[in-house]
Every structure is written in C-alpha cells, then in structure tokens.
Length: 497
Image (tube, rainbow, N blue to C red; front, side, top):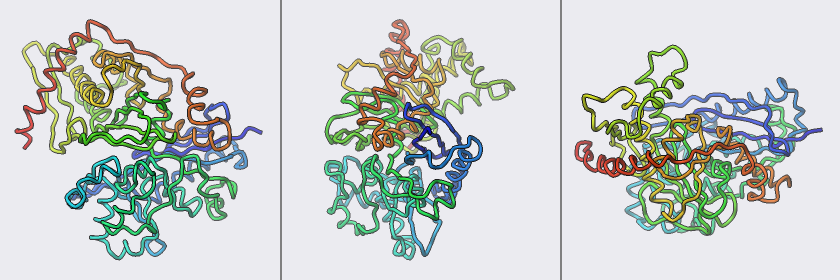
C-alpha cells in the first residue's frame, strides 16, 4: 500500500494541501481560500478557526474524493506564514491572529529599540511594528485580561493548527527567528530579552527542529479531521524556510527570488551569521542546522504586476495576462527611456518607507502603452537588483532560482535575467515550491531522505527547469537605465514627506 507525507502550506491568501509519496510525486493537491480582516487602525487579522476548518476540508477531500485511507498518511507536516501573534487560551478560545502585515505595534517597536538598541546582535534582526515581540507588548497593554489568560502564544499559522491536532505548543527556529526573542546562535529563547520586556517564558512555545515529531493526532482531532489517531505531526517550517528549501537553496551562496503577491530575495550563509544592520534584511535559521537565510522582503511584486494588468488591459474579455504578455513583447528593452518606481504599497526593502509611492518618469510624446507596461515590470526587476546587489558578493555569478507565481510570465523572467545579468533558473510547477520544501521535513523524519541536502539533490535539483539567459544587448541598456533608476526614490522622498 502506497504511503504519503501529508503537507499543509498555510499562506495569507489560501491553504494548500497535498500528499507526496516516497518519489516526491504529488497527489491530492487542493487549495482553499482564506478571509482576511482589515481594521481602521492598521489591524490585519485572520480567524484561527478558518485555518482549522480549511485543513479539515482538504483532508476530507483526500478521504472522499481520491479514496485515500488515513492509515496511508505516515506523517503530517507544515509550512506557514510567520510573524503572526496567536493567543491560545481555554478561557478565551478562537481568538483572531494578528498577522505579520499588521502595523498596530509601531509605538511598542520604538520603545523596544530605544530600550535595547543592540537587540539585533542577539536575534540577528531589528525590531519593527511587525515583530511579534512588539505585538506581545501591545497585547499586554491593550488586552491585559486576555494576555493574562493566554496559555501560550504561537507565531505561525501552522503552529495554531499543530496545537489543534496534538495539543502541543511548538514552533521551529525559522519562525522563531522572526519574533525578536530567539538567539540566532543558540536557537533558544533569549533570557535577557524576555526578562527586560517582561515576557513569561511559560507563554512561549517549545522550539523544535522542523523534522521533529511534536505530538500525535489526538482522539478528538482524529474524529474532526479523519486522520488516523496517533499519526505523527512534525513541527514543519515557517514559509520562508520551506520556500528556501523548495528552491533547492541549502548551501553557501545558493540564491533565489520568490515572486508572489509580495516577494523576497534570499541567499544561504554558513553558520549563524548576522547581517550588518541593513534596514529591511532578515537573518533566519534554515532547516539544515548551522545555516542562515539572509532574506530581504519586498512589498511590491506580483501585486504590482496584477495592478498593471488591470490598468492596461483590464477591459479585455479574454485572458488578460496573455494580452499583457503581448504588450511586454511589443516594447523594447528600456521602455523607450521610461522608468517606473514600483512602490505602490510603500516598501520594506531596499528602502524602508511606508509612505513611498509609485511613479513613472520619462513620459514623452512617443511613449506608448506597451512602454508603460514594460516599464512597470522593469521597475520591479530593478528593485530586485537592488536587493541582490546588497545580498550577494559581486564575484558570485552563479545561477539564480526564481519561484512563485511570477515565474509563469516568460517576459518577466527574461527581463529579470537581462537586468541582473545572470542566468535565471525557473523550476517547473514552482508554485508547489513551499509545499515541497515543507515536505522535506517529513522525508527526513521517516528516512525517505538522508538529510535536507539529499532531498534537494534527489528530488529538486533533478526537476524540470527552464533557464533564461541574459541578452547582452539588453543588459547594456539596463545597466545604464539602472543608474537613473537609483536616483528616483532619493529624489522623490521629499515629496512623500
């Protein structure tokens, strides 16, 4: 009888579930959408019951639609959105999760940085309004009764579901590295930080490696989900760790871009290195021990692409994205001298400015719609180039991997290769990358892979890929335009202010 690793990838927009056999072949892939609540004061929340309900919905499809026997599931593992704050309390059940994009704790973040300006030397990261430590202080200040009654706070959507399945309070080092409370070197909660800010260590989850079994499916959870009682549940990984592993980035210097609604660029470092205090760059623990992910998040990626599609071909009845691709192909490299600053949603990196805006520069009488469309995509790629110039040693001219929904655009991939000046490797079906990365912990746990490097070599490095090589003529055009692009934000910053 075929057996499987069950994987749930809990993102912001949706939960994706799938089953992988020992050959890493995927079956039972289902996606269900999630609702997000937006408040008037920067609140961004999701309902934890919604996560649990959707996980049960996917599992039920496995049992009923494709006739999987629950006993065929050897282990359950996860990836999930990070920097959440989720209070778990028997007295106050089913609290909404404060998501990573929530900005209500800005004042608390300022206080933390003033009180402990060297916190990044322990944690590898500066504290922002999105940092769970700041949100915990906000929670204590604004909801003291609920804070006091909270048994444990967890910091990833997956950790909430793990608790529902097992009653365990657990998290992984990748997720914990985003909280402002874990020592990046020891991979333990940092006593100095907890004591200074009055954090009760008993309210924090236990730290486990991603491949560790943190509990077994309880009788109650088995009745609700259909999973076989006592099925092992692994800690899994925060989404950045799973995506990084899924991009086959495990060794020193491995680099990749992720393009979803938002995006990021990342490079692997040996040892628990901390970046210089460059605004906006995270240092996260990776799934393989003693390796760090240096990761720079961007707020403007696929969301800007989607805006451009609606702006320029929104009235088209047929496939809008295909029509937009044709617009890009009709424009020459450099967009007839037009430049675009892609900060429609503010930005976190390469600049950290919530008030930054998008802008076109260089519009003239010969500017065409195709130039405007292509300038948008070039602007996003220039932003990625700024990131890669900070993260990667200029002597490293290896291949970059591109994953996420943005990799489906051939024009976008080629523009990126031309601007970066290096080959761009795009795995087939890269939308499954986070789930494949999360599945690696299951493979390691049950012995289907010796370790994470073995998983990458056997199941990821050999996958079908398409490689986009830079076109020399285009690269020369973009090299000149990039220098102009770098002047746009500094010139416009006084206008934003």
